[in-house]
Length: 377
Image 1 (cartoon, rainbow, N blue to C red):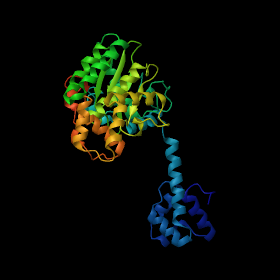
Image 2: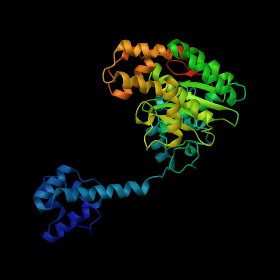
Image 3: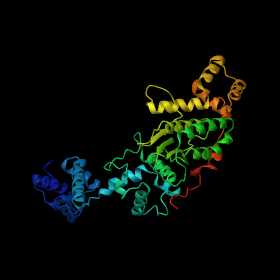
Image 4: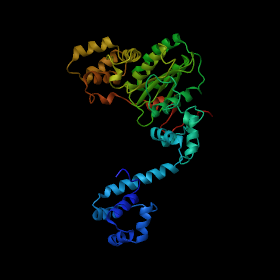
């Protein structure tokens, strides 16, 4: 059947084989002769019902008639179609980004979400691109060494928001000596979850821009470290897990990146730090291994943690856990979090994993949870 381009050509060939006229076929099918003529000339599409009737008459499968009609319709549509290079881009942009959520959170300015051109322009501005087709994550866009790992469009959107907020802040130049002092000062705050409200001011004195941005759906980002310039490090956190143990671990993890100068050439994206990526396994990159070690040691000195586990295993009472936390000057939630990780018993001591978001958002430069950071105003 490959010699036929349309169902009409096939029908005409079958009529010639039998010596039938179009009128004869019309009578057999119970259809008007004009309709049959239009199908043969390609002026009217062949429908499934007529294809089944032709199958009965000519003993040619209906799907062959319909396949010819489909290919013919596609060829006609392709010939008249106007290529639009932005169509594929829109698939990546609108399919990869939660545009509605970004607009709702005020990241795109006053745009009509139904106006595609307006949204594309707003997204180009958001990502610092000359036009929508130059947004970083598009397949043909010039790749920037912005992130240490392959980042999803949603993750990039969150990172760009952190960067734009950090650029608005007025903070003294960074000093590593002041950072070391800040880490010692922060260590004294671990006894109470409410003390997290003091973190932004302490980091500011060390020359670190600290930003809190609510995570976007499916971003799974815990934190990021990067530098605006050689004297302006930035730490961004999402508070994806609103727990005191997670907050202090992620914060100290990011501070170690700053202390070691990580993130100067590209953003250090930290995602899912509550799992294996928070460990010391052979598959963990060296930069992350060092930051994980610092985070764990900061929350609970690891030699003391090991000694406690060796003494009390396999049974850990709440009284012993709380007593150990008090003896090393930290909130019980920090010990509880590490015990959960060590034992795999995540249902234990959950009452000690206190929420910290309301405390930190009250004093940090924050965006999300109903509030929009005044970027660019």
